[in-house]
Length: 115
Length: 114
Image (cartoon, rainbow over all chains, first blue to last red; front, side):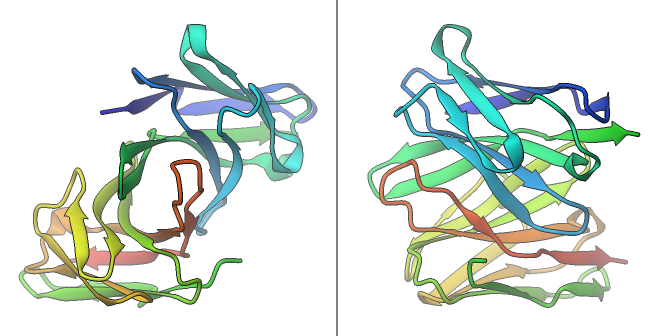
């Protein structure tokens, strides 16, 4: 089974600083990877997804992630943090085959943005 | 926003009572999922469905059952609620033609078992 590991349950940055949220996956086959964001008291929404078309994936709200097979990583970055980026972020990997498909999530990273 | 409605949004129930949570979609998506979210654990899959009457267990299925009698509805039942099932429950849907389609999430149901 595939899995994802998010390094750091809590990341704190200053407004305007670089955001880096780490995600590593374990897989013996090319994975399909996702980043989701959850704002307080809301469900999850998709930020971006990797589907093997390009290793650098751009998402909403200025976020991007780079797939690095050699490092089995899919880290999420944003050049300049905004107060509105404060939320919890989840990395996820798809697994399954045939008619069975499901998402497995990491434990999440809470991003705090300080003024 | 994807048409996903979870009901109820909040519920308090007593230990030992059965509880049913409902997920209703208007997107005609094939896949439906139930997750629970707990601090320090992220989201964990309880059960999922890949078609009407086709369901399978996730990683934390003990104490839960599901049913899907029609495409738009996926029910999660706690047979006899316990305090360890106090959690926020999320329903998700996906078209999943290929592994690269994303899941869309409902707003969640906050369940408290006292």
